[in-house]
Image (cartoon, rainbow, N blue to C red; front, side, top):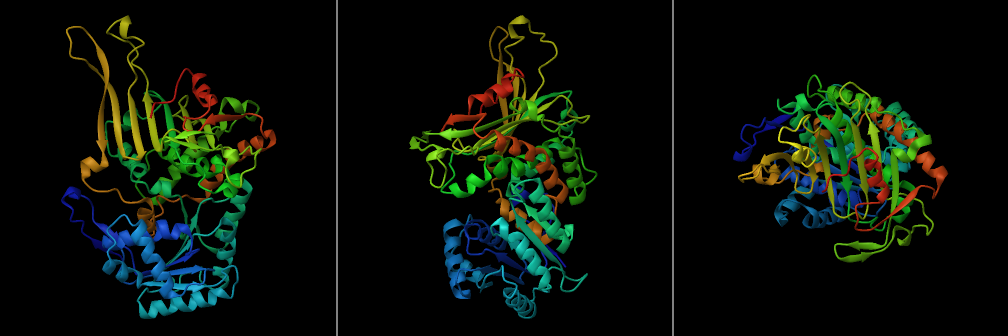
Length: 515
């Protein structure tokens, strides 16, 4: 059974005890890839250094790359020295990677799974992993159904000892590329695994500030009473990147920004902002409320789509003082590409809490800065008692939740400027994680991997939520595909996106919050 670890950091005094997972083996398909080296293994190492991994723990890497155990351990040790967020000295790294094993084979071939079965059984006996198994799919999406079916054929999809051990599977995004493909993938996965075994991972939900949304709303009596249409004018969600496609032209031509960012990251954040209070902080309760939000979002009127959706593509420009090429000039990108690198959308949530409150979301590549933020703009006061001079010039109150970088929350309100006459100026109250707690926030994969091993599905996407998000956005993708270049807006790299995105809010006499 899981044990508990006492958190001794004095700055965390008062926090609840944290659980340590049961003994287990983590199998990573696609273990020679970038995700494993940059994110997964460093996250596991951080958990180990914090005492959050069980003593009986093993990692099995599976890929075509011809490594053996020693080579895999060497490669992962080098990755830790390069990418770890915690000190990775020789002794601690060596002690950690000695629990790593590797199988070279083509895991689209059922024969390879007999090796995996034998190794897992051996680790149960020799390392004490007790039949608890986590399978992580860090492969291209086309391999997800293949791996799932072969795990079933090899007898690895069900717990080795029902009621006494567990088996879980992690599936990376993208979970489908449209509604039909998502339904097909769900059908395959759920024909083999039960929903409580499936962890559809979106690393964005592991970010500390995203999780803090729930605490902000549901642990503070001063915020939740005004978190509704009576007091909130509108909501903005921005996920901006200053980088381009980083040599992934082939992938991006197939995906595009809406698939890559909006369908998963942004829709998940929107559902957390808009959800009703769950009865308890249990996975099923939280995910029920998130699903209700997606179900309440009004489908887009495709005949008036330009009033609700903007798609853009970056042109040549300047980012951080360097000249950068246009998207169409990137390697493996068509010179006539109509793939969007920017999307802005206006959502309406048709329920009692949010009726009439627009949710504006935007995300893009090659924008002015790297920043993710949620902005809540409150309604103006109904009557300005300080006279006509201040009626239109006093700014509305703003709450800004910074997801990255410099995670924190700020509230802007109005105060009197020290003077003999009435002068009103906006001021800010700010909270920053680093300043208030004196600790680094844990990485997203660190949080999510620990939850996978603990069996906590709260931060993972459920089958119905995946399909509802695609149901809303697939018609938009199909209309853009039909329109080709029609309606595609262009923006200079290093700007905040196309002018059409500003017009999206200007129609409602609003504007994007300055970041």
